[in-house]
Image (cartoon, rainbow, N blue to C red; front, top):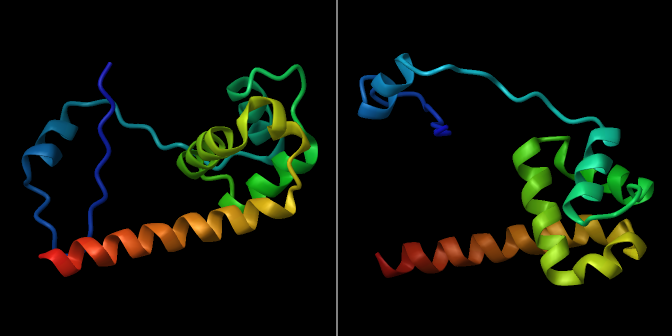
Length: 116
């Protein structure tokens, strides 16, 4: 199985190699996850017996249930706080965590652009 994503923007040539490849591929769209599904994802990712409800609500609210954002947020939370500390994590930290990650990303992007 090969998973390919492409974000088409206005003015982008839809005849690109990737777009032509997509014509022969099966296409499906991922919908938003609800808070319960986010909780299940957190529990499975952190190997927890049950999902931490408050954390699931916070991650869901911060990501609007976007599957990619949920995955990346949980991955980073696990990386920074670890499997044992994740269930006790203050849900209020999720927004701060995401804001910090966005700011760091913007700084990295600005630094890359400055080098060009």
